[in-house]
Image (cartoon, rainbow, N blue to C red; front, side, top):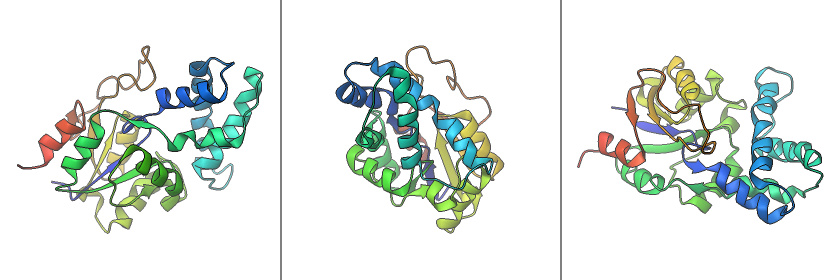
Length: 225
């Protein structure tokens, strides 16, 4: 059994797409909020890849979201203040997340292993009611998943061997990278993360250590009594 569980956050723990679309609709009522959200998120991986590849030094995700916001707004003929970028600190959890984490916390250390900064994830945890014991991930490693050092730095911060830590995610590539770094793995499907037409990560792509429908089922598998 693992001693700690670390979690992907955006998509696995929280419904970022619906939450950001709501914030965009409030801030920019003249645009198609869903299209804007998808375009904004579409800049996410390319921006982080410039850091992962060494094209620029580490930049916290707060700043990347703000830069990407100002990159996308001209495409929609609008402008937005920096305040909209903080919407990533106010994302709704999936319905199973809070009860599942509460049950899991009876037996395990819980922490995010996310590309979000410590500041962003701390504020998001307060908003969404996520009971983390600590916050790990990109700011600790000064790099972005799926680079091995992000998972390894999280384990080292907990003073645990990777084999004592389980990565929980709704994304198969995240779990593949965690497994390659020596961690245990648990897949939780989020088939509507990207909306009704989602085609990726609908099912596990490998024999992950656990495959469960939600966090409450994960707790049932891992927590005795």
